[in-house]
Image (tube, rainbow, N blue to C red; front, side):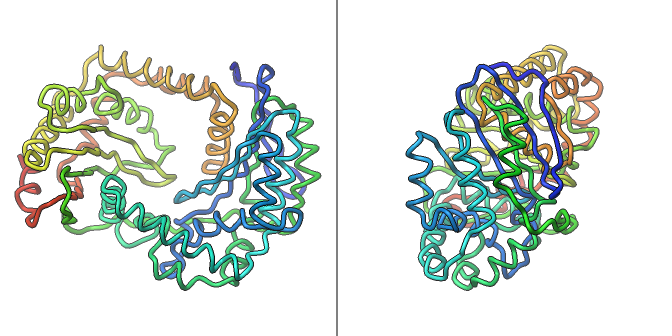
Length: 425
């Protein structure tokens, strides 16, 4: 569905930022409230509170007093709803028929402004959260990502697990929920985005009617990231039949001038099924089932990471193969053909991601929440079109620095040394 570059942004008297992306041919609308909060805004003893609070917002408020009332309100009009917690943002959304759009404002505003955080519900949800933590720790693909994040960013908020440790979940109190909401869930920290079959006038009218913030507050500021020293590699021993690894390099924040070229570099390295790593490690050598690279960036820092699930008997060979490809990219750069294919792939994927109102709402909410400004699809495409071959090769040499690499391995091993040694070539 065509969104073009038409969007409207307005800040209400309360301080709430409201954005509308009309999609005239859409019969649905997604309303998303995104808050500049998350695990990066937590203390060591409250790590996990942002995610726990996300769960608690669905447990009942003033107009919808319990979970069944919230679910029934959305289910009865054929809608869907969910939420997510990240390091630097928390999002809540409802997607339903545009004819029933009023319901989404009613439910979301009641959840975020009037939640009761009842002690009985908190105690009941503790068990749910703890089982969620155990589920991810039992899953090797998830566990190795958690390990890498902690190893890479260290003992500070960016390095902590979003769900938190079990002991924090067992200890969190009702007062902590109210205190956290009062600090972070303010009109200054919240963005309300509506995308789909809705006009800006409708969005403003419904936002003013339902989202009556009494706490304007100030936009929350996350603690400054401190680069960490330490060992290059980490091993988690587990008796499983497939080894998992994550390795990565530090990169700058999401608005840094190198990011467009890094986006292209990542695509060529391991972002597609025709990428270098996928072809060399999986297709040519059959060493891995999955292998991919990803570019994860926050406002002020980030990581270019490689993730793979590998035959336990061939981990050393796989690491050597990955190292070889990294060296080639850093030393020899990429080709014109690779750059052209990456450019069109990224632009094409961007277009595909904008086919439904939920993806559109997510894109605009994310940009506004993290950077205080919107980046349109055409602006994103223009950014990619300006990237040149010399620029990508410069960035490859700059950031693929084996002296700065970190690696986490999970598998049936007792000794990390043979694997760590492969990073030296």
